[in-house]
Image 1 (cartoon, rainbow, N blue to C red):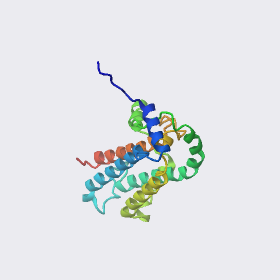
Image 2: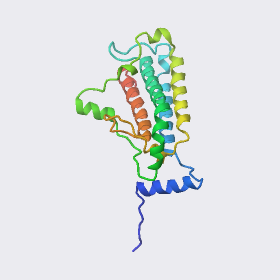
Image 3: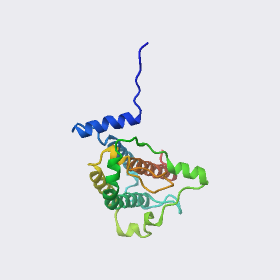
Image 4: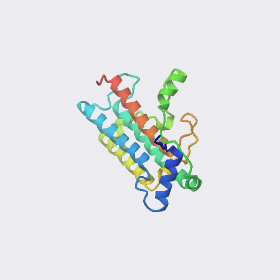
Length: 208
């Protein structure tokens, strides 16, 4: 009978580390690269869908629902805060994560926003530091906001470019709502978070 061999996540990590040690780690951060690609793709698709709202991006679909502009401002604040946090956190957390890089790690995250709503029967509220200022549209243009969101994301991507998945998978964050995610899972959550808001916009603006 022909034998079948199955490689679990631990073996995959060991193989990845072997290539890393001997300079052949071509796919060293493929999970993180994949999540950044998803984020950029989602944004491009949504940008195409809202072209007909040009110069109306700050008009709310309903009195108590965010406009496109407010939504993008929230996403911008989210990415900027995460990047700024990691400027301090990564140098501290990397040494221990590097020691643990031979161990298995998670690289997928559930939709914590849907999970939260189902558990608490209400949507997750944004912390005050991520709430767009009320006078946003008087101070900045929507085009500037879109460019800054992209710029912050590119800076974050560059910051993480020298981290392998095997190290990033052991850099954990003290966020119980997100189940104490690692760095890779945080990028997945960023993408899930943006998709969550894009779907809300589609719902309230009747985009189909």
